Amino acid sequence: MLRARWFLVAVASVWLGCKKPEAAPLPADPKVAKQGRALFQRGKSVRGTPLTGFLAPERVELSGEVAACARCHGPSGRGSAEGGVAVPDISPGALGHSRTKAVGELEDRSRPAYTRDALLRAITEGLSSSGRTLGVTMPRYVLSPTEQDELLAYLEQLGEHPDPGISPTSLTVGAALPLTGRLGPIGHEAAAVVRAVFADVNASGGIFRRKLELVVEDDAAHVEAAHSDATTRLLERGVLALVASMRRGPLPSDARLTEEGAPLILPLALNGGTSDEDSPVFFLHPDEPTLARLAVQSLARAHESELRRKPLLVVHTGGDLGKAWASAARDELARRELHPPQELTLSDSPLPVDRWASEPPLAVLYSGTPEGLDTLLRGLERRALATRVFAPASLAIPQVVGRSTAHVHFLYPAGLGERAPDLEDFTAFMKRHDLRPGHTAFQLGAYAAARVLVEALTRAGAEVTRASLTQHLEALRDFDTGVSPPVTFGVNRRVGIQGAQLATLDATTGQLVAVSGWIPLSP
Image (cartoon, rainbow, N blue to C red):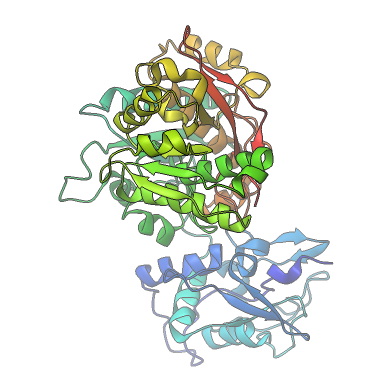
């Protein structure tokens, strides 16, 4: 079946004013044209409303990304070959002039030049400027008056203004990283790794003869600052995308990323991440609530009969993250028709260790501070309880775990044992660029982010846009970053690694050791 459902036919694109020849066309409002870019490139308005069209004659509905004009005509409107169909050029230069004869087999045969009204009629009714019915592969779009103005304004300048951060000689991306304060050393190390990856690419000729450039904004104090955070400042400077920014969780500027369609690639998320299916943020590792789901899935496979007799205990230290941890465990248990968990917040309640001595829980799922984990483990030790504790690997701290190494299973998504990445190339990379090991986890994360960005930019080709970059990120399958398990994204998937292993902390070396195979996240 032809993939022409994305085919916006040979008619879209220049403001020629009114029908009266003496009426000079008015220039499009740049702000309105910028809003129209979202419709053309991403199939979604800046207000979040999906672009909708229907394929004749069955009226098959297309919506959102699959209805985006750029899917077939390309980001600059120059046309393409889609499923064996020649998709015509719809740039202003192509449609601003009349044709006196047919051009090959294209559907933009002899016709007058397109006026604003004729262009709108072609887009919404499927009729060319000559009144001929356009092919069935041309969607008939449903546009509000505001969307009509936005799309037509953008079509007037189609192909004339590249997306931010793109020039004939360079591609500029940004990173919001702490450069001062307690986390400043981590930010500088991450930026150095990304710049070194870019230096290797540039030394080989760049990406389609464009050099990669990185600009960094200090994000150390965005929580306290009264001005805009670093992500907003980077967007205002005009970057194509963001890469390896550090973040603790969602930010107000995420709405700006969504509005502009600028992807944020593999942020250095302190607690992992998760996103809505159409979010511009692509994470490497799953967030802690997802790890809680994995823990429940692992326990259900091995101890389902016991889980049907007694509930799990979920312990956390409060706050939104603790509530999200407990909610994820509760939802996963309910999905498997198992007992809901018992929940305990350490900040509000003392540990009921006396009761546990007579009725020990099957397992404890813990999320929170290291101090809270220490309190939990010491309480279990006092009663000599061998209850297994599951916790995120970020809490694998030898001083906290102490003598409880055999009883604490950490959920680790970065790969251990046979799943561990071979870091030989990364080690050679660091030596070649005279980069010293520092905060290794963040350096590895920055390297993975830069590698994923370079791969997606290369696949996007010479006419890259923010929208096409996002589409090629979504198309990554089992991509080897060199420092992590294979990464896979999708239209409905914004976390590259969907799984983890159980690990214990070796008391002698202080290193994590796998005690399970890979646990893939079940849908």
